[in-house]
Amino acid sequence: MTTLALGIIGNCSVSALVDDRANIVWWCLPRPDGDPVFHSLLGTNGNDGDGEYAILIEDHSHSEQSYIENTAILRTRLVASDGSTVEIDDFCPRFLSRGRSFRPAQIVRRMRPVSGRPRVRIVLRPRFHFGTEVPQITSGSNHVRYVGEGMALRLTTDAPITYIRDETYFVLEREMTLFLGPDESLTGSPASIGREFEEETDAYWRNWSLRLALPLEWQEAVIRAAITLKLCTFEETGAIVAAVTTSIPEAFGSQRNWDYRYCWLRDAFFVVRALNALSDMQTLENYLAYIRDIIALTKGEHVQPVFGIGLEEALVERVEELPGFRGMGPVRVGNQAYEHRQHDVYGNIVLAAAQSFFDRRLLRRGSMQDFRHLEVIGDRAYMLYDQPDAGIWELRTRARVHSSSSLMCWAALDRLAKIANQLGLSPKHWRSRANEVHARICEEAWSDKAGAFVESFGGEDLDASLLLMAEVGFLDPLDPRFVATVGRIGEKLRRGNHLYRYHAPDDFGRPETAFNVCTFWYIDALGRMDRREEAREIYETMLSCRNHLGLLSEDVDPATNELWGNFPQTYSMVGIINGAVRLSRRWDKVV
Image (cartoon, rainbow, N blue to C red):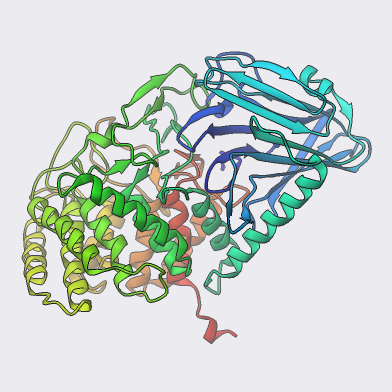
């Protein structure tokens, strides 16, 4: 049972979610963290269809939906009971134009009759300020304007304007094109520009996919995951959102509803690391510019774990009045995590930047000045590695010395030693600090009672984030302590082929759903320990949990395989890539 039957379209400036009947149910403007002018994913306080952009076929029978291969163009076929069929291509334009990236805040829909005489109805009802404002509507011969306070949208089309305004069914006898975006005139006919934009966008994504260094197996899954991660980037600043939604609950009625439309430095590091494994370097280059801005902004002081995609620091959390996903509120905007102390952030910064000192493909490689700035981050890591924080799971009412935070602080110190050596400097200072922290973690985070590394210094509870010990190079994957930790985590946190984050109660009680990235970390650990067949079996289970378009959310119910949590979740899509890279057969063994 996989719900969240949604696809994502976007262009690294904006992104939208389209359900399996071609209804656009989520689109935020002017940025991915902005006002959801289409928000029916989280319900509406008005009539059914408000906050939505639908193309309906009369007497609907069923739908078929897929991406055009190796692109971010979503194609949906709506079929009526008599077999009449309409095909809709949805995309956000993206291609090079006049020497720069063209990625407007715009959705293009091209619909065409495929068979029979389909009667369709266009229902276009944007709402502003989280559904509280109904826009004023005006129209001309080929456009409709939706105007509100501080917001104006224009639909330009060759479809009948009267039928659109009146939401009237009409026979679709030819291809029609609809442009929705800024209140600007189109420079040519919708049909010709729509065709050109789709061809150019198709070519862009195919060429982007062509350059990926793929594993031999599971290529389709990896390409879709990579494109999805790319769509979660905000190219203007280099930021990467954790997901494009807010407030899809982690479990039924759990109230674990959070806004993920911001850039967590932890999640973003894992995104660029996964895309680097496929040889997509541009995302890393863009993100490193964002990181340099954060280092300059924080001036050697506290670095919060999450920022707005425009470097906003205060992501003040509030509740909006929408009913919520399937009626399960609250709908939150902002995220209190910006106030947290999460000390793993320092490791995530250095880990992301480290490659720039070694990789000759990059246009802007790490410099001595960059290293000096990173040393300030390292000083913070060393100062805070044994201090209490909210931890990777962002606990709101409890602070401990979390082992995973200490682990990432060690990673910062370790990589600084390696970078110093690469630059011809003495690594002694950073290596001695890394060794000191390593020894302390091995002493304080190990529990003889648990027979494993545990979630906090002196604690007893297990935590899936400790599976990262091998990935960041803290321990050899065959080290008996790591093997024992993986074994104990499997015993305590595994349910079927899924892993929970932890088993101890938190601010909301015990977690009810498995956390998808934890399962992928477990898969990675098994692969590193040469338990490949077991790892492959679990990986295939995770692939079977994807929705019909190959996408994953944050969480899954192990009993039903129902997807929960914000969508699409970058952590989960990263896991698809990392699992395939770790477990695939090698090209030279087959070809």
